[in-house]
Image 1: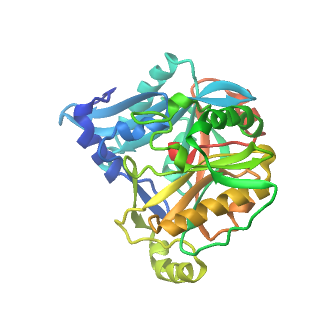
Image 2: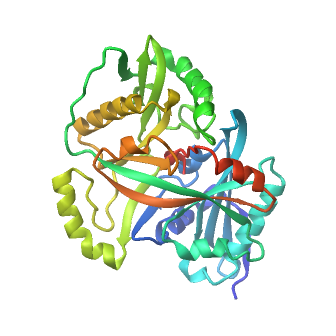
Image 3: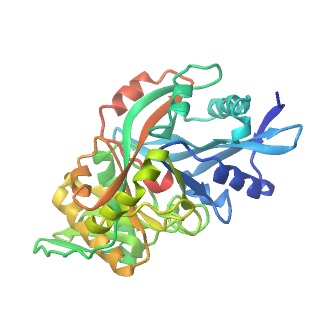
Length: 372
């Protein structure tokens, strides 16, 4: 059995950690490969304002064999600003999956938890990744307890066909102006806590270069709906391809057999095609979705305008939008040609958090897809 230790990540490991992320993809009918070029650490900055990266190392071979990231960021729960944790990039080299590498990573993360003000994390697992799911439900020594929070749907919306933009005399749909940024952040701070739990508590300092939460997002990427000269809804188009990339690593046997037929139907219906294995998905994230009163017609007008603009650019394979299963805006998204990918959201903790879990499972939840 290899001797495994866990240590904090440092920049000299950049290439090795990118390799682990690239070569170890989650199971599922569609296997997505995540890459973080050119810098593993830089590509993780959108996940939180405080990030702790760890890696498992084989002492005998002196090489990394696994990774884990724990990110902390401000969010709204019960209309109050709090913090949430998020676990990601949990990867173990295939040849070490029978070792203690994963358990030792979680023992390390437990110590990180004990020194943190936030004692719980959100974890996303691709539906169909039964090996990982069963592991978390096994109550194996060293692992946190896992609490289900429901399904999370990722919609890949097609950008092949031009759509008609219908006007409205009462509601104006347009891009945000640079001098309106302060008003936009005020709208999010005022409205988001009323609509969703776990919506990020975004501030002006989170926008810009470096490792800011909204890295890569600017005023020109933001759309607003105005009524009586007041913002009543917003969403954004967040292009992260400069620091985060997604590839199709492969398909299950059944999905591979059906791919030709699926792509034929996609061509006719306007849905995104299933790319060949190894191809990069040139996609863009739907972000900062916040609609006053969850008004579906306002969200539809904003989404229609965004899809129209992106289609005219002929740059992206799809618009990628994520919604929790209880989100009332899902019927609007389903109107547009799309493919759905399903994940399961979990809350994990080494402490008793039953009350928090019960509260969250009665709430409408928001997960920023571009930060997962």
